[in-house]
Length: 336
Image (tube, rainbow, N blue to C red; front, side, top):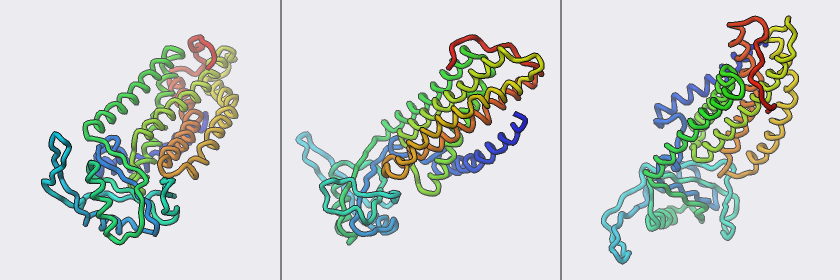
């Protein structure tokens, strides 16, 4: 506890690049991280090419493809009413991507690239694939296709924000009732620290690698929020127990040091088992969950750090401003 400002400084040094990246994303994308089609709407198609194809090659090829606009009569017959080129399509290379088409003759070598564009219907996707086949890029297969309308995207984004806000309020209320208000504030502050670390790191990946936040990223945020608060509660519960038997000469910092030392090994071991589970998923889980598992790993590491080196010192700093002797025990209740 005597080195609390060192730990705060380390947290600040980790948060600063992420906060700068979040600001840059706000300017560039209009959101703290680059949002995927789950939230913005559009079509995302993943192609696997037999031979190496660069991002710029595919971008130029897509820009030359003609997409037709159609109307449909009551019988489902399509009539072409216009055409356009996909000049604004975004192309992204998949990290460690291989073909997911089990029946394809295209091998796993080559390039896996993602095309993100406005929402395309079934016939327009066929237009795109036909056009690409004429661009001398070699054999390729469509590994996956996802389309989300703009209305659904906005609804998903709104629901995601509501879920995050509800989680924070519910956790704050639970800890305030179960323990004390200052315990709740410090636990929530540590949790917000972890959310900022995760979001900041993802913002950096958005700027550097083009990573896009989808519904899995929200899942990772909510999971890390729960993990962080759980780890903090374990430490705070030991605070409560030790306060009951504290000596008169013990300061609150003494009780805090003793409590953290008694739970330190448990926190590290718990987090280590989670990290050892996530690491293989990061390296071998495939492109579809790469950023999800990497975000989870970053959040677990940050949650462990914040519970020990942020939440506990913050509570000491809060109470040292009012008392120099041990405070009254927290509200009674079963151990977490």
